[in-house]
Image (cartoon, rainbow, N blue to C red; front, side, top):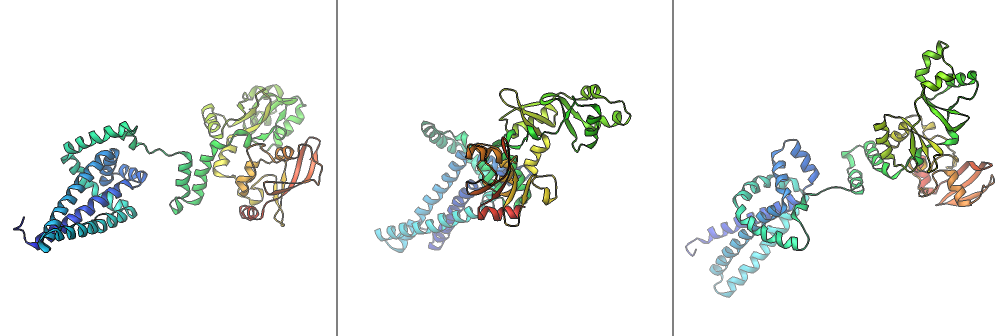
Length: 429
């Protein structure tokens, strides 16, 4: 070693510093790489992504290879630096100068700079490095295997399994964060739809159902002239059939099936009931995401929500659930929210049957939804009685003024949202 010229030793030291920077930077780049973007590139056929994904499937082996190479390079660099120090400053002074100088050089050029660069641009550093580490891991596998055998044994004693490193599942909230922070990569409209899909599990059929007192159906106990007139004038595609009361359901009829026999005059009440399909019942509390699957499995588009006693509480359609994802199908702003009307002063005239979930989603409000589902229910729970018109109450910062009541419910109210929520509401409306 004493025969090696001093310039050659400096050149060798710089090469070793470069290798140290490579090992340090590639470790950070590979470990901080976006795993889902990496999987996408690997499925698209990118060779470097496939190699990197294979390496990251067993990070213990990858880290063992990197650290083995990095420690070897750093040790060799320390030996070369000592020789240079002894040549320039004989004795203990040379060793001290070499140690201090090498520590500073490794810290700046072998650790901080390459790792910062790799953290900022992990794919630019990590993907090319995969071409190096793939054959290097094969070459050093016996040594890496022995080192990992010992280290993995210690990890298992601490209750950690290396195989768990391949698990990168996202929870619903984590997925929500990913969608929200996607920015311009996902159009805002698509972001809202994706977030709405995640929200389906938080809602139940009671949140979106049409209350039983608002269900439009055909009473087959009425004279045929009234029944046929109602069928001709209806705006609905499917109509429930009942006898006297909605609790006495006979079935659900598709109006299109009635056009031909009705026009030919061969339809009567008995044939109408025979053409109807048996009603489909939904237990209250069913999550919306589950009910969407139930509609698909049962080949249904309409169902009746029943409580624990079997009494009908309301009606839910497939379109109601789909609107939770894509928004209202209508494009007319004036009818975007049924039974909700905006006034110039920033307040809103709201029917008592409107659900709190609808108001929160459509207007950006934050009314409490952990109890009653409708405006009427919210006010009755707060006041604990049937209020008189003109009664005012504040709930969660929203000022309510009862404008119309009936014997057992609040029929209409005026709502003044808080200033900030009001601004969001006007933008949404």
